[in-house]
Every structure is written in structure tokens, then in C-alpha cells.
Amino acid sequence: MISFDKMHGNGNDFIILNSIEKDFAPSKVFIKKNSDRKFGIGFDQLILVKLPNKEDSDFFIKFYNADGGEADMCLNGIRCAVSYIWKHRFAPKGPLVLETNKKTVICKPSGKNIQASFQMPLEVSNDKLHSSIKKHLKDEKFFIVDAGNKHLCIKKRNIKKEDLNLLYSKLEKIIKPYKINLSIFKQSKELVEIRTYENGVGETLSCGSASASVSSLCLGGKINKVTVVSSGGEIKFTKSNHDILMTGPSAHIFSGDIDE
Image (cartoon, rainbow, N blue to C red; front, side, top):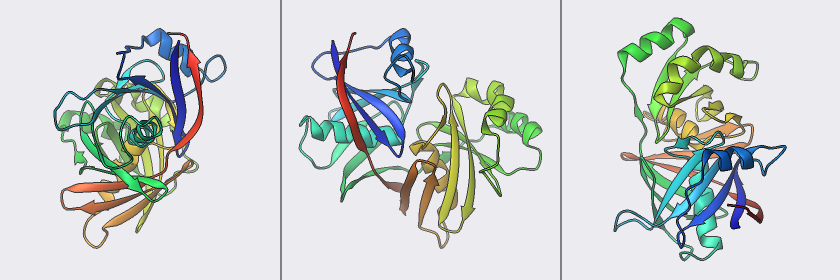
């Protein structure tokens, strides 16, 4: 048996496992079985908390999507992983340096929330890819941004009526091989509304890396902070030199044990 905590960040839900004392490598069968919301526990992603690879890091955090595929980053998940670490006293409640496959993230308490600091997301330049996407989107304004996970971010006047499943199905063959997720967003000054379809998961109530991606597009000039709102809640982002500060919640749902 292996113990887990189920947690969520703005409705983006996870099971988190301790892979510190005993290394655990979940199979795709294990993940798909337990991610099922009718026959399993149900979650968007599985997260492993592991020993660090680098001397200047405290932990290594590994992410798996509900379909068993590995993800490079999950910023809602990393806040939950920090809460898990503090809850189980693997480290004192204070600043932590966390490694992921793509980025190093520094996390610390911020009132009832958690603040995470990381390098500003970057726009991805790929002319061939942009050309293929443009054929489907025509005159719509879009960006590809890398915030640890890559996101195709499409600017819209209204995101509520959009059929996101249909839009993803049109673009899936183009973006999925590049591990690019799909987000649509609407900006009104310092307020940004967003919806995200994650590869291997579907539409989620919130996505931290998607929120970071669109916030990086909106920050600049007179705008140094934005609030990104999804159906699951809100995350605040502030620009700080070449870094971005994310402040958002994490919540424990329940704990349990499952067969390895």
C-alpha cells in the first residue's frame, strides 16, 4: 500500500505521493486507473515529491497527467506539493527551492496562500508551427508561451460561449506532438479570464502554467500585476524584474492508501 493526499488548487486536483524514502515510479495503468472519476480516486494529475538532484534545491517535483503521460510543470500542483511537504513536516514552513523538469521554483507562505517565484515565461518562436495554427484560427490573435508547460494562448472577446472541446479537436494534431496545451483568454486591463484544455486531461477548472502564460502576455508597460480568473478561482501575478510572482491557494481534501 502507498499513502497519498488528495489536494487541489482552485479546483485543479491532484493526488500527491511521497517518493522520498522509497522511490516510486507509477505505471500508466496505475495512473489511468486511479485518475478515473467513477472507478478510481479521480484527479487531473499525480504528483511525486522526490529527493533533489541539485545541491541547492530542497526537493524534486514530478508531474503526471491523468492519461499517464508526464508533464513538465504544474504551477497549481507545485503549490499543493509545498503544502504537502509542510503538512508532513518534510521541511519547516518557510521558503523552499523546488526543482521540476523545466524550471526551478521558489515557494514561501503568503498569508493563507502560497507565493511562487520563477523565471518569466517566454514566447515560443516556430514559424512552421505558427503557420499551421494560423490556417485554423485565421485572423484571431494567438501566442505560444512556455511557462514550464507550453500553451497556445488565443485572445478572445468572449470565452464563455466558446466550444473548447471542438476548438481543441481542430488543433490537437498540430499542438499535441509539441506538448502544447490550449488556452483561451479575455483581458480587461488588470483582470484576465481564462479557460484551458490540458493534453491528457481535458478542460480543467484552473491551470497554473496557463495562467502564468497569459499573465506574461498582459504584464508590461503600466500593468505590473494581473489577476487571472478561471472557473475554479483566481491567481494573482506580479512582475518582478525578470521573474514573475504567483500567489494562489492550495487545499487538502482527504488522505488515503492505495495498492501499488
